[in-house]
Amino acid sequence: MKRIAIIAMAVLLSACSTFGGKKDEKNVKSEFFGGDIKITYTFGGEFESISSSGTAKVTSNAPDAAEKAYIVASLRARQQIVEFMKAELESEKFKQTVYESLQEAEEELKASSSAVTKDKITSELQENIKQKTNAILRGTYVESKEFDKGSSTVKVVVKSSVKDINTAKNLSRLMGN
Image (cartoon, rainbow, N blue to C red; front, side):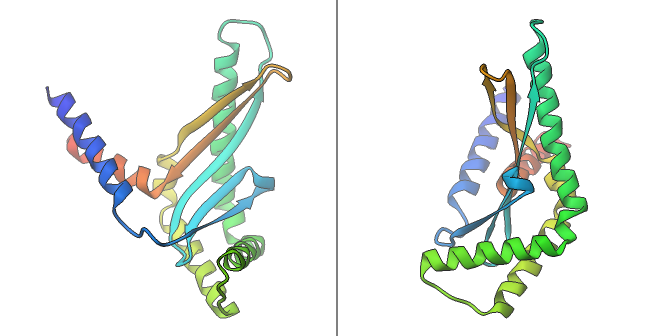
């Protein structure tokens, strides 16, 4: 009975987090590592989500070979997030990529802001991600996985988002942890 109540509360909490908050604020997406890492954030520099993709070859015909490849691919995707947090987040390339993404998003919305504003948003995002690094890394989960028979390759996308992190925290509190 307690388990059902916890699950029901988790569903309600995630529904509340889905419908609450800033509805009109458009998200911006920046890609890193050749598109393998995607970060979504608001125009205010608030981090929304990060996703990373990883691949692995299925190397045998054993019954568990595909599952082992999925594990390897998800570990590679998570490793990319760690590498991104360690190196790319502090780089000039990060700032340039976010700046360009903001520019493109503004062109789509027919809006404009100054270079100073874009620099401020970039710095806000950078700081926002740094502050949430531990929660982001703990909150990653496999969002999707695919198997390409032609190349015997597995592709996994792992994701972590503010909404998911908050839902996990609330669920953990409900369970008494």
